[in-house]
Image 1: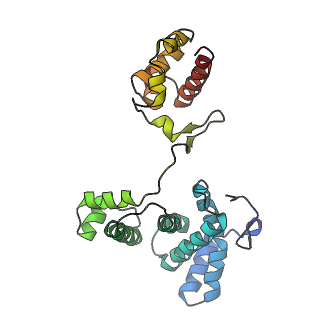
Image 2: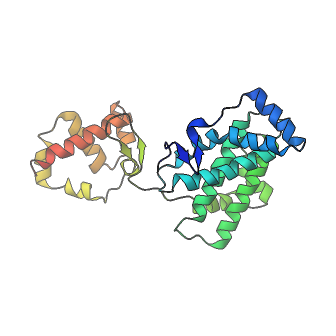
Length: 257
């Protein structure tokens, strides 16, 4: 996904304007007075906001042009519904609406099928949530959304969970310039192949060739089933260090197995 390219949907992103707070207020006042040109200037002046948001979705495999168009719909909804009387920056109000629009688009194009009743409840919850954000100028709690819908909170939570996008086990969640940490590194499972592989006598002999800290890390990870985060907390180093030491130790052991 090329979110850094200069042109998206025919828009030269390198030449997008940046509006000051004073100009924004003036344009909103003119728009509320019925001036259509003011609305167009507000849209053009906030396209950089859409660009910043779509970069959060650069690992979904969706074309940047498509996400940009969907994000622009969210931006226009935010512009049409923004209340100048509320003491809130426009960007603070608009970003959640742009994100919500993109997430709805991704859910609608999700290959995993969810029952109609669950999807309908989830969409109603999202609509209520958006309306409450506008009314309260803050993010409502799940309890508040459920009360507004007249539905049990656990039903709302289950419905929203059902329409979440699946996450790849190989999706990176942390990177400090060295080896990235993936989702799978956060998961402990005593049945995984690495655990079975380490149970053999040959493997134990190979482990004896490692340093004390490396042996401790592998023992905690594959015999005790702990996550990298748990190991890091117990031995007092960062999770990134645990990840690097674990990978290096396994590579070293393979020379002897």
